Image (cartoon, rainbow, N blue to C red; front, side):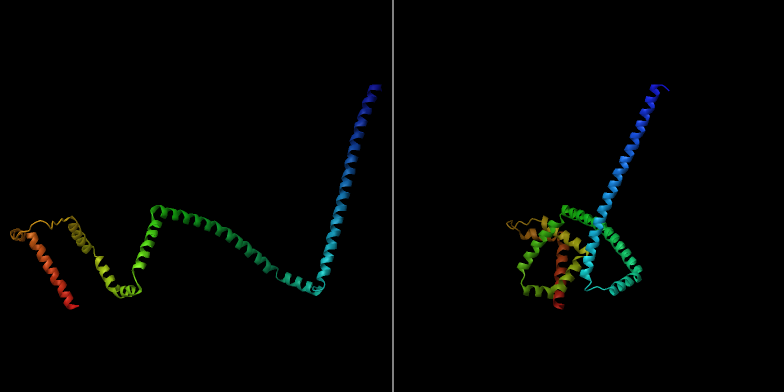
Length: 224
């Protein structure tokens, strides 16, 4: 075996020894870490145990073994009830979550509707209505309101009759004619002109209508 071969083998052996040494060092570090962890856990466990003993000593005056056993028995007997209670709590939580989502959607829809009403002028109408109501309240006394209350049935009856479409149509015609008619009170009216107008069939129908109207009104007054 020549010298170069021996040198190569020696180098391979050294590399293997280095690997073994690294592994040994890693194992040593791991053991040290585990030892440190065990010491930390022991220290924490001792602290917890000591604190628990201290707390139990404080409770020992008001809590005894019998109470603990009784509480344990009640807990075991009511495991199903406790399970049901937790299930109900979970259902209540789900319901609250769903309700919050629904109420949030409803509130957003409500805000959109309010904005729509505001753009259409409903709120402006309500503000003006409030002013009108204030004016009415300032204009009417308590005695006026009592009188209005006594007259309310007749007012309602009049409103019912005014709701008749045919009556509304006739009133609309009369108001339109009155609005368009221009009467010149400075013009001179002669008897001959009046007689000439009396011969107009429309004037005759109008006079007949007015006479019949006045006649019926007087008859109603005499009856009531």
